[in-house]
Length: 616
Image (cartoon, rainbow, N blue to C red; front, side, top):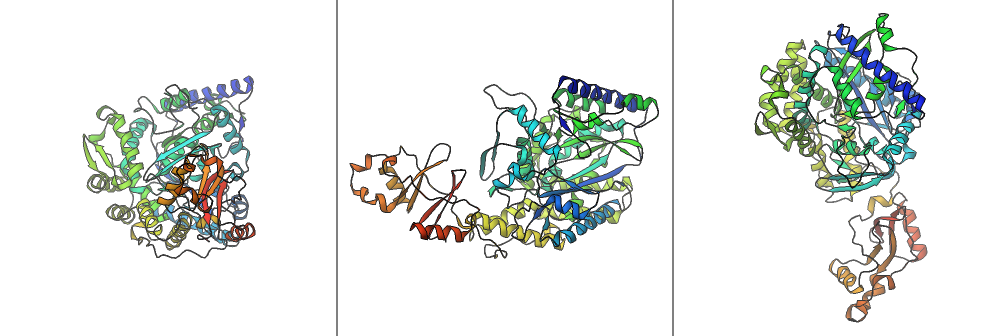
């Protein structure tokens, strides 16, 4: 939607006008395919690089718009979060050293942005999900102040009519409600594009679906979200839930999510894929239309299919079909959306080359794969890869095989052949595919992050561990060596130089709490068993109701009669609290001023942690 001025569909007239142009665009695309007007060669590749902005404390920096103005380069554009930006790279013909040339342009554009960012004390970070993101970073106030993001957010909220329920289980569990689509701003990707002939598009698209699982398993780089260790590629689960227009109900919801792997193999022509999306997902935004697409074709002009592209921009399959125009000629391509950003540009170009190589190297045994494989096997492979990365077991050609052996024994050789057949130079192919091979034999980005983070948690609280992790990732990223060469961090790794030390750095988050109706006897035993001196009292919504301290209730321990009374008769309700992003100095001064040894940490009166004198 980036090049369109969008508004929400409101009136019947607006909707009728939009649908007219949308259906007209489908007719126009049908005509272009039928008349052979879609460009078939040369085959081109392209990419979009999303990245995070971080400050000197390795936390998100919401300066995207001012940085974009200072960079002043049309290759750069906004993202929904005001701490993210995107680079749209130029298309390159798939031949010779095209991947090295793409890599060169990417590094050059990042260098340009870094030189401008340095003057503002901002750093650029390539990672699928920034480890130091907090829930408060995904508030609507951090949405990029452009109309199209507000329109999209409001339109999806109006359709859904309830908060977004985010529930992801991995080694840890994340369970929260959110009131906007801003959780999408957690995700940054490296989106790869491959131009496809309209004659073989559907067959090729099905192959892209079939290989998505093993390709993703080698590329995962997003295992952490809000300090929780979740999926190897948590972006897959998060993005699916963060822009889901389906409301929860007591009825079985059979609708497909707008972010989806799909539900079946495709048949027919490329136009049928667009028709399927239009049939499944209703439009909720529009733009201004000035020309009739069919009339333009009949006048030997190339239409931009604005209505179709706008609808396509609100549907997010992990392999997305795209229509575009280059040098006045229409083309079709597949956009790979599941590959995450980072850990380095070398890793990203290697990921892209691996995908393109396997796409181009498909052997005859995989022709008509929609008749040979059950679609749900490909879908299961994709989600297994997202969950487990290189540890995934995949169902391939009728048997289970490890991701590692499948890539090393079949897909990497296939990628080499596909690239050579396309005319890519052997030097380029060997350089980047060697990165994939070394990564498969050691570890990818998500594995490096998880193992490093676990070590850091031995000596540091989660937020500080996330800052150390991010700082070390940044240092290694700047050196440019692929992630397979990075040493795993150890618990003795020191934190970066932090300018503001916050309550969040030292607060305890794994805390016991009780209900106001619990008996004092039970609470006393919990406090004694767990050596707890302060016990928060909360309700079912985690709202803080009161606080019990050991000094206030310890005398009840030997009095069996008094142990039967409930917590609400003994808890303090007039209590001082603090917010997690307050400084430790503020917390210390508050404790000293009120002669207290504990401060509950709250976010909108919901308990998120506890800080004591011992922590300080």
